[in-house]
Amino acid sequence: MTRGVLLGRAGFGALGVGALAYGAWLVWGLGSTQWLAVGKWLAGGVIAHDLLFAPVVVLVGVIAARRLPSYARAPVAIAVVVWGSITLFAIPFLGRFGANATNPTLLDRPYRLSWLIGLVVVAAAVVVASLLRRRRER
Image (cartoon, rainbow, N blue to C red; front, side, top):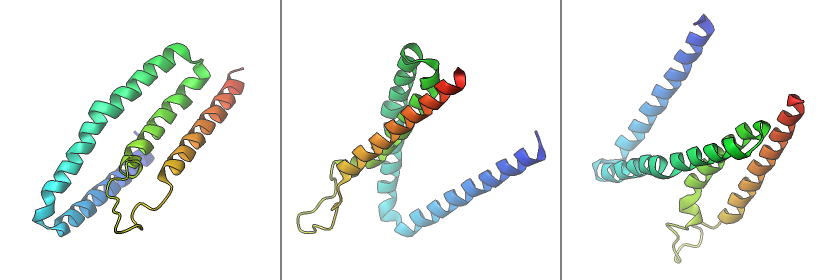
């Protein structure tokens, strides 16, 4: 391994440890009454990933490998990961969880439209990337 690779890994590792420490400091500041809620939220993320997101990505990857031309496989796989991540992040907003009729400023954005625009942008990126890869393969 080259020195640059080792320095890069060490740098990213230090950033990761710093981010974890900052997150732990923020959770500590919430107080012990909120730690159970934070734990449930973190466990929910792991469960959503392992039971929903990862199997869908694998299934789409298998289908894409069999049905799509070689130049479109990687862009589609990347798009599934990106779109799935955006969707998982957006579920609370799309479902309007936390909306309150007495406070109309909560969840007052067009979240579904924004999510659809994100989907269109990702799909357009797949088309462009696939066309570029197709041209490169010729």
